[in-house]
Amino acid sequence: MSGHKTLYLANPYGFSPAQRAGPLNDLIAALEAVGSEPWEPFTLGDQEGWIGQPGWAYKVGQNDLRLVREADGIFAVVNGCPPDEGVMVELGMAIAWGKPTFLFRDDFRRCADSEAYPLNLMVFTGLPEDGWEDYWYSSTDEIPDPDKALARWLRGELQT
Image (cartoon, rainbow, N blue to C red; front, top):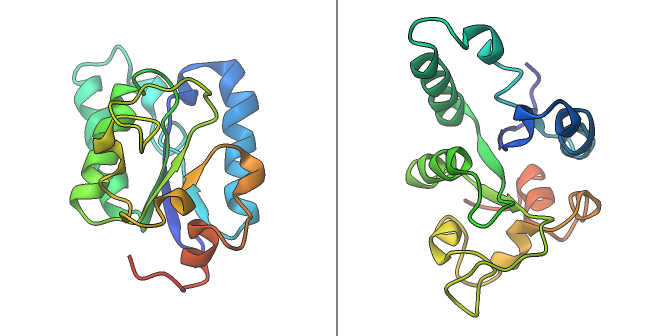
């Protein structure tokens, strides 16, 4: 592991070889390019090797829980209506532990219960009330934006 800040990359992409080869790799590359160390749960465990073994689901869940706890922050892919249940649990844990939280959604569908937020308002409880939009990313092109929260956090300019 490097000296970079670590980000647990909560995402549903690892379930699909096509999404692993495309969107997941693109997201990892963008996060690495800005100086973070993304922790991708499908590669930081033997999840595929555990499937079918006794207790495999428990092993996967405990591994992901440990990674969320040990990461410096979380970068959560919140695509879908509603977003992936596993991502939501990981996001909830990170919020409860006070982890810096960054959200990614390149899904154009709105599934909100509020005019202020594009998703269920609880997804935003780990973000500040004012300026939450700086923690919201709708494309990998936004990740290196020096004015958005991730870049500021990586530079040590944000107290989270």
